[in-house]
Length: 172
Image (cartoon, rainbow, N blue to C red; front, top):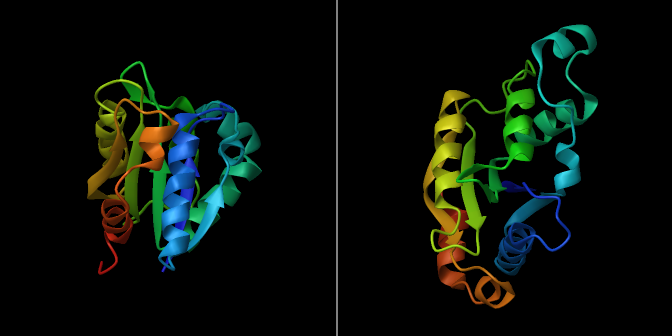
């Protein structure tokens, strides 16, 4: 079972990058095989049908589609931007959905978010569930949300909960 961790923020001090690394730390401690992608791997022009027709799907998005397809499940860690999804993740989902291998089809996806606000990114998670359902992915019921996030809050997230979060979909 291989888990692909994808972060949706390129900020140097991103709380969501810190949450992604906390999840990876737990995965490593519990013997969960994984691959970690930096948010830079999601770099691509904003999806545009005319651009796709003229130039095809960018190589970075073809590589991302192959990584998603090869993984047993994907953990998307997304910041919440104006009560919705990170544009970096949304654009990557759109581009990957254009690659013929159908990487999102029936893929197990776990959602996580951290936010300094009281909802911990749950509005972004809610929107991601709808978007991912539209491209055929299965999103696990539990999300790893860290409200009022800071370094300490992320570091102290309950390890047993995070292990259970990461094990979702193992029997699918």
